[in-house]
Image 1 (tube, rainbow, N blue to C red):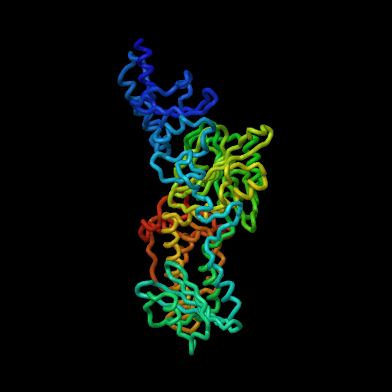
Image 2 (spheres, rainbow, N blue to C red; image 1 turned 45 degrees about the horizontal axis):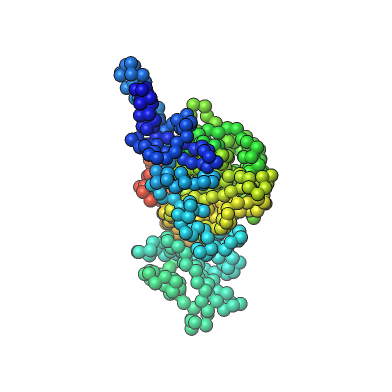
Length: 566
């Protein structure tokens, strides 16, 4: 009798998640400390199916005759071994327990975390009346348009490069560096102007008939932004200035993308289990074939997405595809190196954890928790589950769901209702478009928008310093030493458009600009502060763990180092 009582007490103390089938319905049994299920029906095999909670919360249940000192020793060892992993674990949200117990069909693909912070599409059990990506928000059904990250980035290249134009520079006391470009379109009697500031670039086209005389650079700048207070602009006379200006304007434009791919098997709920999968089922391989083709990394010459193509340190194979003029590399967890004895699988997470968007393929009925993968950069997940239609069991179909952090704006294409795809070609078109749009939309999240603002500010400062210095050299200023002519093409060649790579490039270019102006560089103690040349000039993101706006100058240079942190 006492033994049965102890078993009941130990069962009530364990925090566990159990999924199973009972009477043709799926349900979740969630037990926490001092929590009883009351009148809820519990299967007889529930205790056998319990999944262990985080290691720090588990307590070994020893016979009453065991030595108490041994018990405490085992508890200490267990906590020390699990402390790092516990930081990456998460729990099933308690508020969803009663909702899941009443579901009479398949469990949802995604569950939001207990503390919130994520939106899920389609919403769970009509908790939200309108889907985050429905036509209510301006998205058109069955429209698979790819978003543009910066619609005005190529205006200078389109309207200025092929015409005679002038550029000017100035430093405003309040706005900082300003770069102004002016072009007269005589065939259309228009005066086209671009004003580049730290926050943004302003573009305008004015009819020449509005002015009795051509306005000055100061007047044109104030027409675009009334906050401009400078009284004079300096003329840019450097012959290769258009190349430098184009590089700055298009630093956010990139035709390359990289996404993570996770493989979640049935009854896998934590990061360690998902990242430890090595075997690929035939169903998972079929989904990978929909996303792209399997390529050999050795000697691969196209966009590599940060993977090693020379020494095989990131595996031998990867999934790659071209899609509407864009190149996409997938970081597939099962194809990245597996490390025995490392439950966190950092060799895999160092790539997937530094992606911004990831796709999750599910096998079974285990939901994916929105925050199960701990990362500063992962902001969105697309979850795909293979199902069989009830009306035709021989037909293969895929169900899709999306989750993103709450500060990520909605993005298309809209999920169909129900979110099920039976056509492989249509599924591929939807998934690739959704992945690209998800990343572009994630850049508007608070963390990335702050980093982008810092990156743009650094690049504009570098551009302004470079144009002023080169122009003075061009005019024969004896106070400025002659500069190597190769520096112009070097800056242009690095402008490949990678998000974090742009930040690193801004640090390197600004440091070089300080050197040319005779400003001594502050040398820190870290070797990672030295400039590093990226192979093939690719925009491979190698982010650090913290937002740049929270760092000082020396820490910013450390943040921009090529070392990746998860």
